[in-house]
View 1 (cartoon, helix red, strand yellow):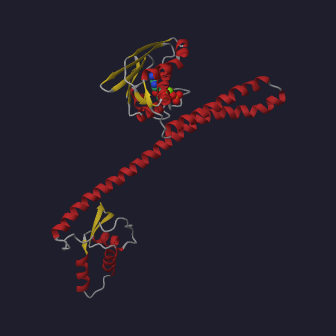
View 2 (cartoon, rainbow, N blue to C red):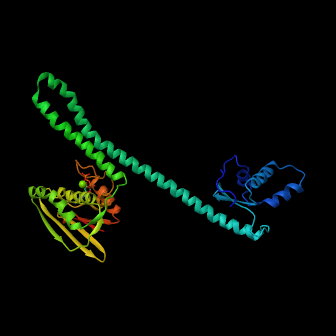
View 3 (cartoon, rainbow, N blue to C red):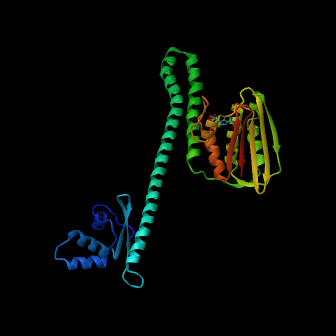
Length: 330
Ligand SMILES: Nc1ncnc2c1ncn2[C@@H]1O[C@H](COP(=O)(O)OP(=O)(O)OP(=O)(O)O)[C@@H](O)[C@H]1O
Ligand SMILES: [Mg+2]
């Protein structure tokens, strides 16, 4: 190709000419045509000048339906011979395929951009929704605090001291979670045993399980070490354990199993909770998807991202009668 980057808008005389004729042109043929007639042909003359400027001897238009989307230009043949009719036919076929490929790539780019915009919209809507509640609480309390001071209303002042930091923490946690989800993480991977990470995550919720009458059962097998980021992996599994606990408000059983097969390790987190409907199962890894009154819906999205960053897979199966099981492979 003689030239790679030249706009093919209305200002380009070659593009204007090809848009009209829709046929390939060969420099020598144009020169002959211009010399053989007495009539002036400014459009053809400009197309010829443009070809010479970019040192091309053939130009083939690329069309997507009726739109000119590109021009394939070629310089002299290596053996310096003229382009034959067969060459031009071959170039026409190539240009048709090129046009189809280019158009497909353009449509794909357009689709990706649309999807990105849509997910940005969903994330922004989720964020607004989550921040609005704590903000409304803080706003309400700020309005009453001045008169509470003036009138010595101790209870309102005590409520303010307790609730405002709580609500600010909620916003702060949300912002942190959102950053974890959206920013590429810097992983500090070292050789670790998954059983230790699970034990650590379980310890965090041991009291909570006892309080909620949740029986925990472990079946941690002999598994090889893997390169992992301890904090991130712990976060991934505490999210799963917390979800399991929240799904068993009236008690139940939390079962955790690890085993290895070939060179992979598998982790199963199973609860005997409320389960998830087929519809929710499809959406639950999406950010801000939550069926809980106080859930932000970032827990599983973050877990999914962490597992993917460790080149792993996570799947879920659920039955409203028997509970939910998450399987992670690494
Ligand atoms: N073990 C489970 N049992 C039943 N439903 C679950 C389970 N885990 C996840 N879900 C469903 O998936 C949804 C998304 O979970 P996710 O952890 O992403 O958000 P959340 O728990 O609602 O809020 P967050 O984790 O941000 O506080 C939950 O609202 C719930 O409907
Ligand atoms: Mg959660």
